[in-house]
Length: 333
Image (cartoon, rainbow, N blue to C red; front, side, top):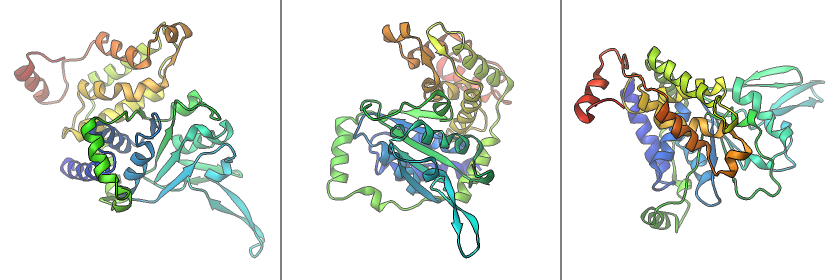
């Protein structure tokens, strides 16, 4: 199954990188989030490809896809759907909204009012929608890819902590290097490459890959390490709010996906290290003093990764990973 996963991920990544040139780490994190059954928040300055990443990933998977442009006048029912009176049946019938899709692209999510943003809470956490006392399940797989611009804040509503906590990971794309930007100009000058993208996977295969990720081994030592890392954020004096228990679940799920993408059926501390900042940083609320000192959540997590002891025993049943580290680098990190 890991062989099928590796091949499928390579095809999806290559497809997305035709649009988002020179950002393989960003594409990989998006795929980790997909396989971890999570949701992705893409936050960056204008024009770096936030929406393009979301649309390219959605088009690369032959699933149902919907796109919502968040605006101040958007209502919760515009997302979840509403009950419409049917004259012929003399009864109300439910008309599903755009949230009833496998991949939901929410563009500029912070432009909608808090009331509309809250309509996403149940959908993202429980994979269901409740309208007029009736509950409707969402399809599987289900992933929300939301974008927001942190610079242009006029007319926007900052995402509340409860909303941010439901996103498995946050990614910032950043500016491309000159070579990648030149390649992008050559590729995008004549036409939009998104128009040429064709699906390279489907919902059934994605579900099989998700099931394979669930079976990736997580030893008690690594599990305890993840809990200690997350709980350490709640004791930092620089934070008003540390990471939640939900973030621990998201961290281990993403670590399983990261291990699977690396071709392993077991999780090692390096998997947690590689995704700790994208998974945890957006959930932390800094104190005013820490903000004045120009400390960032990412800086605090890097410091924790240096301080929290890393387990070196029982990383996998065969200890092959430990032996490889001893051979290549002297001792495990």
